[in-house]
Length: 80
Image (tube, rainbow, N blue to C red; front, top):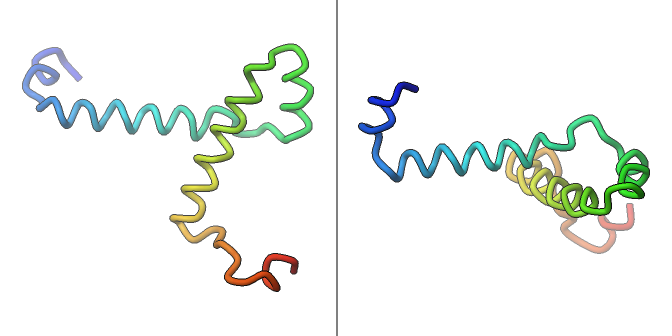
């Protein structure tokens, strides 16, 4: 985007773009890592654990919205 385009864009639209970029960065920050790999990395950098948890929460939220996973309807479905 050019500077002129940015100046003409409404504030709410720019805030929406920034929010979407933030969501994208969290949602794809840990792509390709497994629980085990994150555990090994967290030994050296404990803050990775909180990033991993934020990634897992966002991923679960969007997977549920997309219908990739769904919540169990009953206890029997939960233990299957």
